[in-house]
Length: 245
Image 1: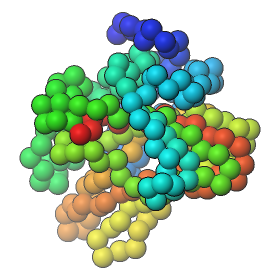
Image 2 (image 1 turned 180 degrees about the vertical axis):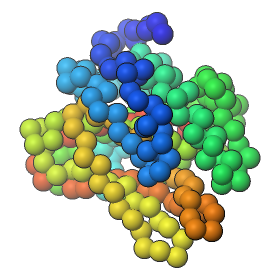
Image 3 (image 1 turned 90 degrees about the horizontal axis):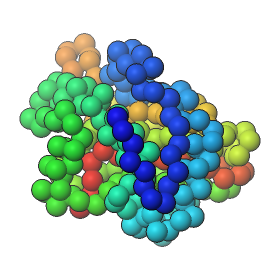
């Protein structure tokens, strides 16, 4: 895939996606609702992307979490055109995840199917009035956290998303673990803590996924968040595949 650089953004280096064991990753994603891409971004690339946070011309809006009861910390949504490395990752990851997304919907009895190309899915979003880009940068400081939530922005929702940790745990910050919870029918919620390092990505379910039980498959509801930072500063890149109203 050729890369067209955003005029204000340098190109970071990411690991070639074909080097990952996708059959194993998708199997793990199907089994537990999340999986990791270790070392997706190199440290220099992480630093360059994190530095974009202080360039407001690249973003369409900023959210201070405490004002909305979302937690503490803040994040900004990128404007179109997206910085080219982020746009490239979004476009390249989508077709690797769409078959599992379609499989999940079929298992859960959901009629929606996702096209092979991300551009075609975005056209569907935009036709429905979901035309605002959703990739974002998040920034946390000491005492900040992100409440458990789901990134739903309209009628059309792609059921998987990606978060890339741009800061180094233990060096740039302490605390701030990525947390997932599964709400299972007639059972207590199940928590997961994903041990991300700098440049690692986690792929996870946005809201629902099917789980195989003794009486067939059932649907679980997922939320994600970030535990409280004890010290330092933490940056995260979020890649969401559907756009917002």
